Amino acid sequence: MKIKDLHRQFFADGIDTEAFICGCDHSGTTLIANILAGHPDTFVPLYETYIFCRYNLMKQMHYMRLLRKASSSEKSHLIEKTPEHITFIPVIRANIAGSRFIIPVRDGRDVVASLVRRGKTLEIAIQDWIYRNMFALAEQEKPDVLVYRHEDLVRDPKKTIGRICSFLGIEYSDALLDYSNQNRNWFHEKDLWSGNEPPMDGKEHHALRNWQVNRPIFGSSGRWKEELRAEELRTLTNGHGRFLMEAFGYL
Image (cartoon, rainbow, N blue to C red):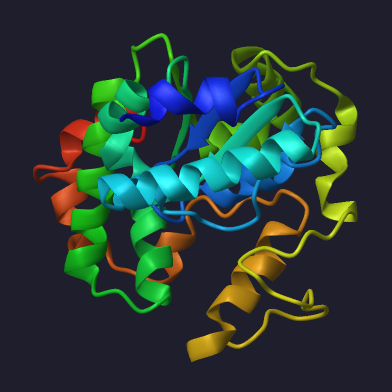
């Protein structure tokens, strides 16, 4: 039996909208999830569930558990964030009737620089950006999908967050812009790092991400110029990634 045959009748009482934030890592997925977590009508688990990356039985069990949590919270909108779900949108769409998808995109050069900074090789980081954003481009014109540029959120957060709220069918409030005052602990972190940026070794990775996502919105566009040479990114600017960079307005 598919999820869609079960979840509305038995598990999703009171849930009006089920939305999924996905895309390429380091493109702002956690940031927008953290902002939306501050809305009084949304239930946002503060971790990545990977539910639809699982086998059928596992995904059903885990999703039902998540729906029960959302229903018991008395919130009307469930918003889940797992970047890898970008490749599973058709599966989610087939199983969750009326599901919606929020996909932030970000300049590939900055994403690659960030991924390399976190330990990925340059080649894999470039491949990841191209692969994930091919799905974003293929989905962006569909009525149940909202694709937006991370840089636009940084430049005009009120306008971009308002657009996202409208897409989700929830009321926008300027209070959402104050998300950094609420200090939510993501990725099962128990404490929020304070002061300077935490170290980048091993187990501190989640501490760093938790610290970053609780900071006020800040711009880092063009930071790649300080860390990578332009010739290292030719796959994005002159190679097979150029089409995507142009499609999203980065070239």
